[in-house]
Image 1: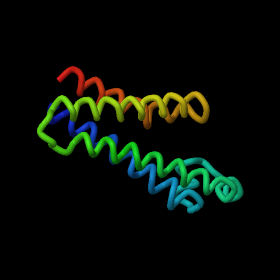
Image 2: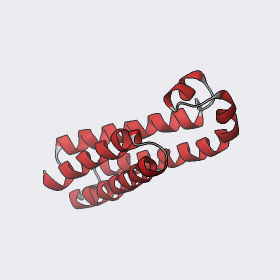
Image 3: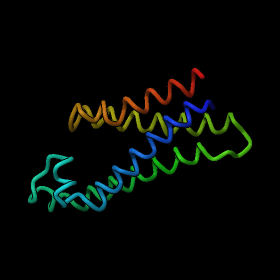
Image 4: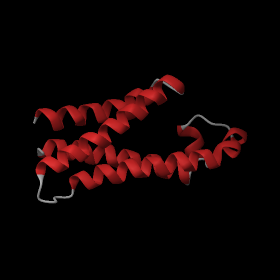
Length: 121
């Protein structure tokens, strides 16, 4: 995998670590409510669901980080990166259709760019 692909994968992984923090720990705090355009009442009622969602974002980040660890098989790293980037893209597309179009640009688009670089370089 190219250095550019690795950098883009790291950025997508970092983004999902930030989603984990926002959803698991800051959901009902001012910063989390601002990011997700939530009210205190709605945040309180959905806190457990958001924490679960944050955990899944952590799994996506872990898989992307795993693809960056040199294990001696470049093809394996590309396959792992491809799988997890596709997971991010699908989740982003679903979120864009079901929650907000903003998710398409914040989550799916960076993963799509990273995936293109993995495949092309």
